Amino acid sequence: MSTSPGEEGQGLRSSVSVVTDSTPYLPPNLVERWGIHQVSLYVGWGGDLRPEPEYDIDAFYTRLRNSPELPSTSQPSVGDFLARFEPLASAGRDVVSVHIASGLSGTCESAGEAARVVGEKGLPGRVEVVDSQTGAGGLGCLVIGAARAAEQGMGLDDVVDVVHQTRQGLQMWFCLDTLEYLRRGGRIGAAQALLGSALKIKPILTFGTEIAPVGRVRTRRRAQERMIDYLHELKGRGASDWFVQHAQSPNDADALVAEGTAIFAHEPLFCTQVGPVLGAHLGSGMLVGGIGCAPGGGED
Image (cartoon, rainbow, N blue to C red):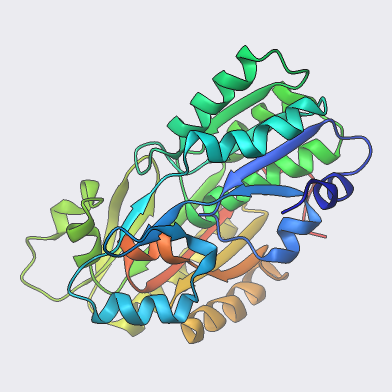
């Protein structure tokens, strides 16, 4: 993505650019609207790792279901981040770079090393890396919050504060068809506790510094009902924005969007499909969440 659309999207008042990775799975119109810069993670089979936007999502999930071997995933390199940070910092723009939880990926580590290199070069712009302590749509909400704050003319430190404040108001659940991909990929975390069940279950989990269980149901219908219940809970807790994501479950996602629109009286901030990097570890399922302290009100 070029620099110029980002600068236009964030407005003339902004001196801060917002960078994230590819795992929020934000829709292109929001990426362009808010001038968000992205650095891709990598995924592939047999050592053939490619940036995840290069994949056709449906074809990827088909291969994931049929392959006896799980794909590998990798964080961006320091050089990938430098290629994004240096032009911005050289132009005098400060950068807030917000990424998937460090407990789930080494992306923050790569970004932090690149920020250190930029600082040592004495470029006019500063780079601050923020560990989102979440991922997927939750990360997307934090990124949009940062971009909103930047558009309002906030400086680097204030934009970082907004990210932390937004994270405090973020709540997110997701329901998977199986824990098998998390188990095989080694990202199962506290959800390990659910593996011993003799029942065929659909786990309900939360996405934070690690993936942790919050419940389980036995049928797809009950999973959908529980996610609708959760949308009511989010509304009751004061969530101002909400979102839906899915992995190979478009009909379930559409149903959740319809229910959530009735509950919140406005459409979601976004509804998208989770891409290959997280899909490799999660398999199929659905995710909903909301934020209660995003600056700037609802989406334009």
